[in-house]
Length: 212
Image (tube, rainbow, N blue to C red):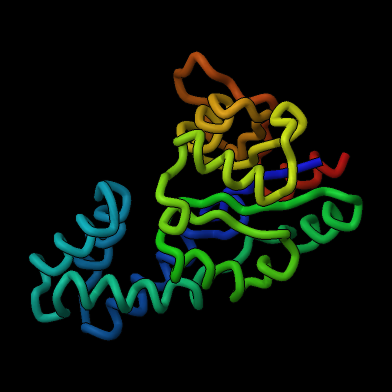
């Protein structure tokens, strides 16, 4: 039994981590409510962290260069991003019952591995595949193949991909030949020819469903 697990939005509460970072950043630079709301809008609309910090540096040049801002963000986010409630307990239960657990996540290794270690998830799972290290990003089938190999499995139909991103986790996992479990966070499934094999409203519910 193998579970490939997304990180942000599935095991860790990336939104809570970003909100904590934004509050800290606003306090450090004495930013007002308008700037704080703008940070949250930019987080939702920026195409990536490069674009996010380019835009931030243009709007607030006194806070630093894009490169410096992104460096500081990568250092802080692992300290600010919590695991979702119940995640660690359910991961321990799955591992004890024989599941092989591998995290497969897009992002920078420094930040993502930092979150795994800071939350204690690194001590429970069998390994992780981070896109920066692997050289490809979800939904590329190659990153799922790398994670499956790390889990020591070859039968993709017996492995699950659990994640909250419909395109990266569910459509990508399906294309890689995996069964998929979508963490919906209460949202409706978007228009898509592919549908998840299972749906849970929260990360804890998804992991509990795997345990049966």
